[in-house]
Amino acid sequence: MLAFDKALEIILDDVKRTGTELIPYEESLSRVLAEDITIDSDMPPFDKAAMDGYACRKSDLGTELEVLGMIAAGDVPRLKVGPGQCVKIMTGAMVPEGADTVIMSEFTKATVPGFIRFTGEKTASNIAYRAEELRAGDRVLSKGVRIFPQHIAILSAAGHTRVLVAKRVRAGIISTGDELVEPSFRPEPGKIRNSNGHQLAAQVTACGCTPNYMGIVADDKGATDHVIKKGLAENDVVILSGGVSAGDFDFVPEVLQHNGVNIMFQKVAVKPGRPTVYGRKEKVHVFGLPGNPVSSFINFETFVKPLLFAMMGSHLQPLEIKMPMAVDFNRKKADRQEYVPVHISISGEITPVRYRGSAHIHAICEANGLMRIPIGVFKIKRGAKTYVRPL
Image (cartoon, rainbow, N blue to C red; front, side, top):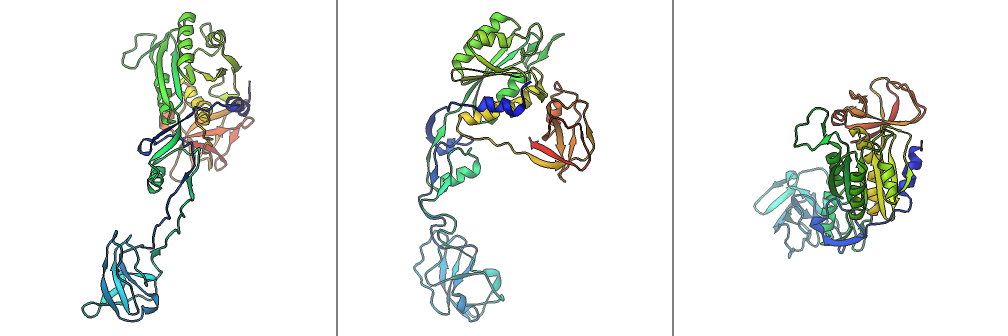
């Protein structure tokens, strides 16, 4: 069996990129940036009031202040604040010349009509100064970043309305097995609904890539050969589930090799998911994942997902947090790195969920994390910390 780290190293070696395309920034959510983004103006672009109040000179706070007028957000001030003077100002409005402080409305009191007095003891300036956040020309986003809503805000603020992004990876998804029927059918005796194919398609979509669901193929060499040929011709990545173990009908590796796929490994020291196949044909990457749904789910997250992001020019660094066990944990064998579905409590402790093995997909639904147990570790005591990958 190949060590987990070595398997991942093989997958990520000499990855070919997908190319780039220019798209409207409104359509860039979940895409991977293929360029650095700089801002074309200072942020803030002028000294602005951080709250509603009165703009004045700090040296005048102990005196009565004449109110010259009001400045709303979006106005360009035509007033200049002199000694003993102030201007009523709204949050976000440009601070007028001569003022160096904005006093909060709550800490003022009207004296006679047109005049106020500061009633507080002291105050901050309450001004957001020009360029205190960013200067024109500063880099605000780096190539390789995956775009989330907060990045859309930065693109908007930078006036970057068309962005260069990596093209989406197209991933063909093939489910194998005579026992499978599509979810819309009620299974007859001996049959089960195909959950893997649609789970994998959803995982591909969640990565910002394009799933190409190619349906169910029977346990037949000819049928498998036909769909693999089609998959290799149409996709950047081909993901098969089932048919990769050592059974009489598990001939996916054989058919892959027949179609010119260079198989680089077939077993990994990981639980669940030991019978995992990976190979390449020219630029096309091929995965043969186990048929059990927990295995396919986890091995997608740990092996396929990093590759998809690498192909789009992004280095995926999975978030793993050390968290304490809420209970004692034991396992009988420690010859493989194991991922166990766990529940992360509000207090940050982890408890394994009810889990009956790699066919128990409902365990993943009940879990909000995966606990990683290294090779050689049999026991984890309550209170001891171990690595968890949040889901």
